[in-house]
Image (spheres, protein in one colour):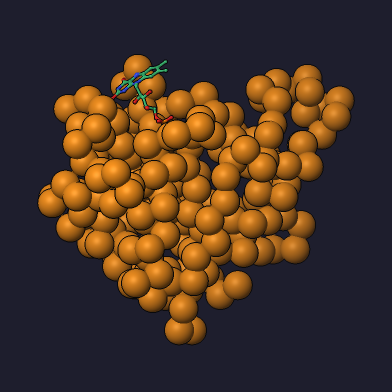
Length: 195
Ligand SMILES: Cc1cc2nc3c(=O)[nH]c(=O)nc-3n(C[C@H](O)[C@H](O)[C@H](O)COP(=O)(O)O)c2cc1C
């Protein structure tokens, strides 16, 4: 396996999202590190708010099954996650909850186990979305059993961290992005199930 398949998406679908801006930079960094990247937007996977009655009566939405299959087709997944009130955003939480519901019937690993996850965040504040990343990491690692890249990239002071072309000019975050991208590609090559 030379170029592992890496999926990248942001946990924001807002026009002008600063986390989507970092996702674009992550795509570049992962490609430079040797990954074959698929970059998606959660806007293409709309899902209703999870409700057990809805699942019981109508089943898992087609968008959740489709996203689960896209994740299963990847050896590594990079999520760039905004922070709301010190935690995970509703879009990302709802997406993860729905995607955790379809069961694979052919003994393949599901969308979470069997692949490597890396996390990043951007915010205008001083914590760079790090508290939200801790919550997201807890859920992925301790509840969903994912293998995680140890390092996480968090970018504070977003208004000065990027230049007008969207390049990440803040020195420490830029170095960290390279580190996380290289580690993701290397761990995906070593530990992820073949796709
Ligand atoms: C409901 C809400 C709560 C927020 N809470 C936080 C927070 O706890 N920490 C933080 O750094 N930014 C917080 N923000 C600001 C977001 O980081 C900011 O809106 C950012 O642009 C969202 O990411 P996006 O641009 O990728 O959509 C919050 C924004 C909203 C709407």
